[in-house]
Length: 307
Ligand SMILES: NC(=O)c1ccc[n+]([C@@H]2O[C@H](COP(=O)([O-])OP(=O)(O)OC[C@H]3O[C@@H](n4cnc5c(N)ncnc54)[C@H](OP(=O)(O)O)[C@@H]3O)[C@@H](O)[C@H]2O)c1
Image (cartoon, rainbow, N blue to C red; front, side, top):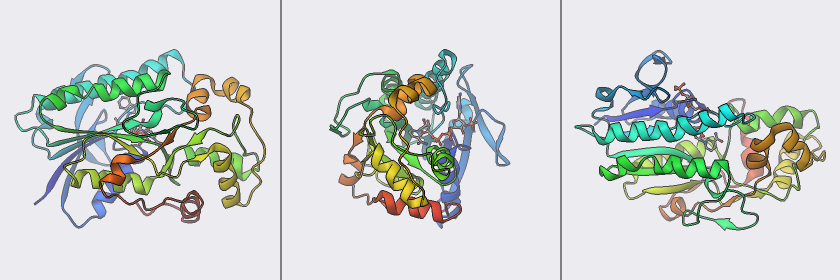
């Protein structure tokens, strides 16, 4: 039997890897895209526009699951206008989608939404899991409201899963590719104190986790998507330098990070979040990559990931 999936954010880092993965599987999947664009890689889309509140309600009928990854990028300096777009694209977009799905005559069984470990805020050495309370700050508030925005789907009996992604490592985009140039030039090193924890996961594991969650009906609610092998930022920089055979000793003090990147630098680069993937481990998921050095070697020696 063909599984019908609807994917938002399908042109993004995670969405395009997921599309490639599904296309490579033997099990037949009818994958359609929910997008602001008329087509994604030549395939016609179900249209929506979270800014104007438009969604093609008829186009949402009859899917087995909806995977919702869309959101304005957070990886740039946060102006007031960008903060509004970061928030509205996630909170407004998720509410629009969840309300429309709840009204479907043939709603999906499952709604999987992207979320982020930014939920926990800056927690020092504390190990946080899905039971931990939300933290403070712009990102933590956005993520809390982003997850809350799926309430209509939950109330309609749809299984809702919030994938709290950590730092997704990939050779095809995202944070790791932005770090490569300074490290290759020998300009990499610890940021701020370097003692802040970085909770990471490879893109290959992210895709495998989505597959695992689709296959396991008992998984619901918040799911941390990071390995349990968080490292300090100084250790991360050392390991990346070693993998590239480059020195990684040039520190960038916290004040310089704040000056260059403002609030975004403070919350994304200087905050410490040490996350335990409790739900995934309890549901029997085994991470493909759990050692940072091995993961970076794999990512940086294969020219492009196979998924
Ligand atoms: N990558 C990470 O390290 C990471 C970590 C934590 C959380 N996450 C979250 O996981 C999700 C997917 O991540 P990603 O790295 O794949 O993201 P991405 O590469 O930035 O792609 C996001 C997708 O969202 C859609 N989009 C962008 N701006 C939008 C807007 N203003 N309104 C509505 N849709 C918009 C776009 O799809 P269309 O153009 O087709 O509409 C885009 O392809 C995001 O919500 C992100 O915050 C990612």
